[in-house]
Image 1 (cartoon, rainbow, N blue to C red):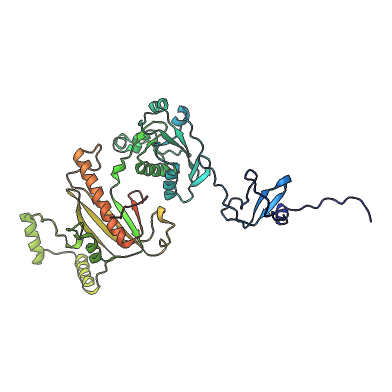
Image 2: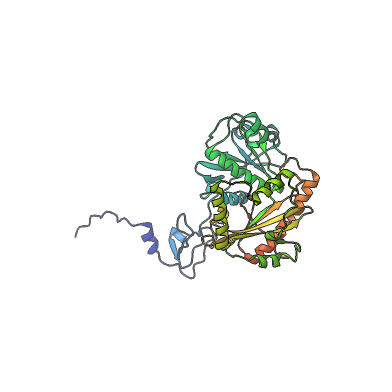
Length: 406
């Protein structure tokens, strides 16, 4: 028999770990050398764990391994450079806003949003947010941003420009003022609109590159709410839920019409002539009228929604529109009931006609009325939610957590 050495046999790491002898019960563990293995890139736990024993031996332990460490998402924040900040669109936030809040809103808007690396939040397509960056005093003054917005997220997105807006549009539209040389289009425009929604929710602002225009949406301007649920509630039942708090709430079909305008003498004469048959209508108009009357008499009235009206604030009202909808907002796409029947209970704020909620800045009276109305609408949404369940979103389709303890 030949004594020549044979070539070494190749064995996989998995096979080697499977034949590791178990550790003796008397061997004390060494906390400096203990380690575990888990499936790479997943969250599934293996049924075995291993540690390095004396002499460098791999020791097999009959215990479950913990989850692997999560992906590092955020690096230590550094001060942003002025040139880098000026060359990109910025989402400006206060230092109190956590990166998890930015991520939650991004996931509520974009299907594929998530962390692609430390400090890089992927939005969709080629768009991403990089940050957070610190905005020091010198950079803030150069950018012309508010003193409390000391956190910046840089938008990484290809620029797409359309035609320049006219002077009339620039006077009325904030985006036109931010892009006087050419309006953003395509992905860039859609991302900027979504960032404005995020800025309103987080009491932040957007600074446009180039012009340096700062867009600061009013966080208190989002007053209306919507409740999405798989449950349909009849009008009388919902009225019964709301009346203890809103005693004058009523079905919109029971609301009397406004006092009609008195017709002029000429209008009265023309109506009388039509009733008496002294005015000849075209034959196709007569057939259409007769067909409409016949259908109204034969076909039953089908109601697939209803609306309730209640006073809120001092001089405003809330319109609660109830209807079935085909889809839910993006933020609710993971709800188990979102693939079935979905009912929308939308609570719309209808301010008094004398107020001008779209004017800026608002008067003190308008702000107080809006604040009182928002409080009442939130209470009404809480009552609806307590009956139908589901989820509540704001005007920007972001999730809202209501305090229904009372």
